Amino acid sequence: MTYYINSNQARSTARNDLTIFNEVNYLMEQVITTSQAGGYSITVDDNTEMTESTPTIVITGTVANPTVTGGNTFIIAGNTVTLGTTGTNLNSVIADINDAGISGVVASKNTSGNLVITYTAPAASSWAVTVGAGTANTDLGFADDTEHTATDPSSTDFFNAWQGNVDDPAKRDQMNEVVKYFQNLGYTIDRLTNSTTGRTFKWQISW
Image (tube, rainbow, N blue to C red; front, side, top):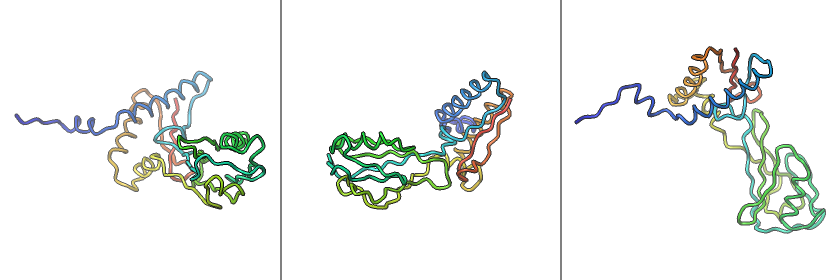
């Protein structure tokens, strides 16, 4: 027996339902929160797969279980942290960096004992961060004055599919399903270019 599926079934099979589910749920949560506060519209330009505009950059030192000389420095995103104020081992280095309260910067370590810097890049046309020429770089395993760039999040793929820069039927279909969902509930929903990044979009929903 030959087995056939129709075009609607084929499209449904190809569709990534979890992406649509997560997008719709996040947007609806914002709608409910805003409406309960007396608002009549929302704009979402981050925090979803389709709109992410603040990707993370992970930088890992090459030295396992490092120790530093007290008073040496680590420079990240233009901010200088003096190390060794509470100790010179890796845990102390992590504490010193986190205690500095640098926006977007979180220090941790991996299972091999390497220093890991996780940087949440702000919404911008370029997502990058520079490790400066700190005097503790050799001890920690970082190169001086090195720019680290985020891998483009999938939101840029959705943006390019929306703009017609690439032919991606799956991405277009997923976005169309989100639009259809809200329109069927009586909302007005639009996609607008996120002018801060220039390569992601934002949802605007009103009621």
